[in-house]
Amino acid sequence: MARIDSIGQFEQLVLTAILSLREDAYGVSIHAKVQELVSPKAVSLGAVYVTLDRIEDKGFVASWLSDPTPERGGRAKRCYRLEALGEQALQESAVTAKRIWDAITEVWGRDAAAAWGKRWRKETGL
Amino acid sequence: LRPIPPKLLEEVVAFLIPPACREHVLGDLRERCSSTRQYLADALSTVPSVILSQIRRTTDAQRFAMDGLILYASFLTAALWTEGAAFLNASGELRSGIAAIGALIAFVIAEAYVLPVRRGPTRALLNAVFAISVSFLVQSVLVVIDAGLTVSLRVMILGGGMSAVLLSAARTVFPRSQRTFKAAGRAVIPLQDLGERSRAFRKTVWRGNINLSFCAVLLCALGVWSALGDRVSDRAVGGAIIATALYILYQVYRKGWTGIAAPNTIEPASSALYRSELEHRRDALLTIGSWYVFPYLGALLAFALRLPLVHPERLDLTPNIIPFVVLSIVWSFATKKLSARAAKKLQDEIDRL
Image (cartoon, rainbow over the protein chains, first blue to last red):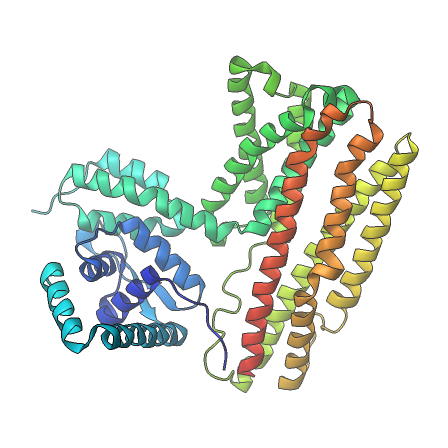
């Protein structure tokens, strides 16, 4: 089994945003989705571009330019889609996150973890 | 009506964004524009990031170290040529380093502003000339602040000319190859793709071998220069450096050139042949420290330490060799790390066969 490059937390967020946006994944929409995921923290558009370049170099995503649109001043969008390697990396991250959650639940107990999750959802508005 | 940013502001932002990402970044900024102030804030936070990202994509650690060494060695050689040993008596290495740093930063930034389709010898030479011009500008500002930190006009012209030719040649001969193995880790490679992948792999390997051989020839030139000195210690160090360079060239031939066919070789697509070539290259990259990097570093350090050996009466000059030593060590570890990374990617490719 081939090993893949490890990914950081922000890369996980950007990959998740691309996955959930499907065909509509481009700079502005990815930034909005990442912002929603990390709320109430703020994320700059520049940080999203840097991460998109890095994960593209790693082979996790592929990109192409769409047709220009008038609301963008006649400029094209760079659209992104997940590659097989990106899906694999995201799956591994999700499994790790699940293990962390299970470990927390085991120590704090299911009720405490549920209460903590409820409070977190209320604070973040998710 | 959607708010649009002032035309002049948009043109300034377009000028600052590297061409490779200008189209979509400008479009995104325009789409997000709700007021001029918000557009400006967005642009200020985005432009530095996209420039840095583009620099990372066009200049890796190895290339950065190579460009730095070329610039530094060019200015130092020019200074020693025109002013002789007297140059070393007045923080010569430090002054050469300052001249090189200005040019290095300008060159790296200029390279980030080149579209991949426009890369070529002319563009590389233009960027090198631009970098040297920036270095001239830095020197003219330094003359006003502290003239003791500058090099003479003759050194700037000679060193600048030499480094412009060498920099453009190095960037043309060893272009940054990225995404060569980006598909690694996916499903098994289809048989019909083997021929194309094998040819691309051989091209990459041949370029890498030319890179390694060129650096060994440069080391040999340093050795010859040192061996032509008047003092015995100079000649002894020069002889040792030449011997190391020849050993490295032999190892590049043995580990690099043999075992992998020429890129234009035509033969039926064979998984076994491709695998053996990949394994040969992977093993060479994994052991590059013993047959290339550390002998090379040893020779560079010997060249640097030659200074206190040749001028034992002026030990106060010894700190001047620090920039050269630091650059040499950085280059060595960058080469080792990049080789290990490349070997890992080759292993991924082998796993897919």
